[in-house]
Length: 306
Image 1 (tube, rainbow, N blue to C red):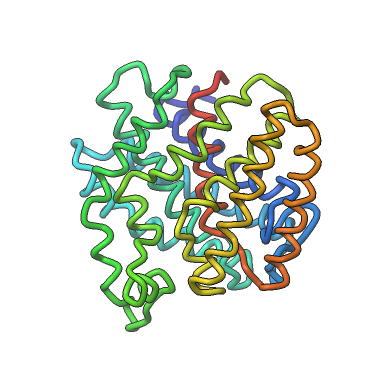
Image 2 (cartoon, rainbow, N blue to C red; image 1 turned 45 degrees about the vertical axis):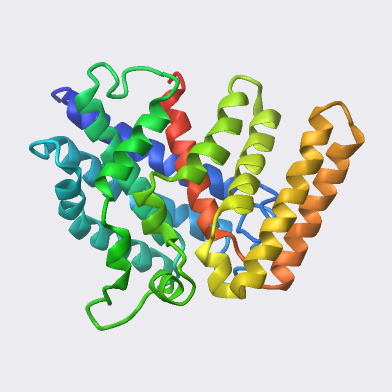
């Protein structure tokens, strides 16, 4: 059997890394309001098995995004994004076929597909950085490329779907002026850059316990800053503010524990568990923050040694 071409190998690797990011996010225990190995969170229609099945169903489509991006002529990111919409819609249909219509990863499909395409586009302009090795700042370069690709995308939130249906993101933008996932992409995912990537980078090489804590800190950091449309759609501005305040409180306790106050680590863990119970009781899920965590895991894997 002939060896795979370098482009085919890179497409396969990017698809595997994106899928692994979704699975690692799903398997992280202790996430407040989210599906994990220890809880269904605020989702009565999801469990860990469904999340993993959904992630694996998306792997071929992540590969398709990578292959199309690698073969796309020129460096027009907006044109590339337009070309990827059809495959993205088919990927969404494949996800719903596996989950029985449950929206497990629609937001993550959008963000990870965009990150894959942006990485490919960036690697063309930076020879030697096409997945050949680690490098600090690679994540920021990819996110800057995302911003260029997504210019004008936020305005498309005002366009109804084919049947005239308006998505939750569109509705919240109209009612509350919230940018949503497309606005975050247009801005280059600033919350991902400032709150998610830094703790993941700091934890590299420090073992599984440090990694787990970094993942939780990254999630809480995103929750504290992001106008999470999943929280807004379920609980309105009050629900968003409640979740943001709880996330910031836990992060504050962990910061004090890092300054040598060992008792605050236990207090932070207790606060995290309490926040999880409160979010479930209120049926609040920080799904947008979970999508950013998966995106951060993907970028961190690109930066890290294989």
